Length: 299
View 1: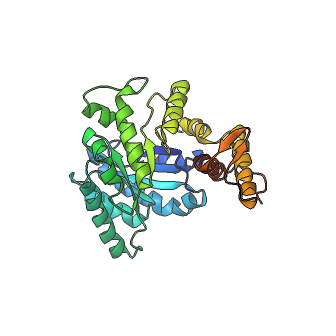
View 2 (view 1 turned 45 degrees about the horizontal axis):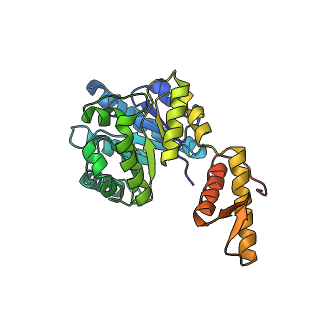
View 3 (view 1 turned 45 degrees about the vertical axis):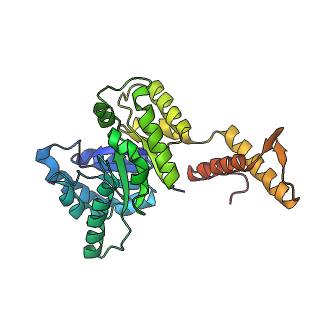
């Protein structure tokens, strides 16, 4: 199970930040070649990220840190050139910005496949993530989510999405509720992960935890981050508590005993247990193991 609780944004033109990003142990590092990079620095950022991926790739894999590169859109003069450099450097994932239709994904996929063949990289190695940043993209979310077997996740880009709605970000996020709902449902229906937008007030831990808790409850896999200090906060939100783990263990053990005794109905802690409850308990234990928590009976 690949955890994507935290995806740390790193500007692709900042070598000091890039070389230390792994120290903070996010689940994913997203090297940005798009919005964070001025037009005059697009080429140098592309070179830097390509070199970093080639130099530190084995280290990222050893630390189980997923590498993601956000390219410029293909309708700009930078998008195809980004792919030419970055795919050959073998990141785990290419992130497509401003995805409005399934066609946007298929166009990027065609370039990736061509480059993989030219570079001798096994076809299908490079995965794709999309960013939904407009009402049109949100309405097309399911078609986008099932457009490619390379697609492993979709994210909502809050600032652009809200701007396209002709409103602004608020503390409670009511303006993003519909978009978040459409995206998380589409992602889950297609069997891929859903990532939430950044929380830009890096000094407001209480607000960040409140928003992270909300999007976890909605079904999101994790959150995009703009500061390393947010990593530990979101990991705590997403890591099952001791109480949740103990309850899940009781449910799984009771399920095993019920199957051995051919019981169709049974209870745990005085409550009837059925298939959805069993699946949720199993997921809690998978999350705990993926987060490095040793469970009773583990070797």
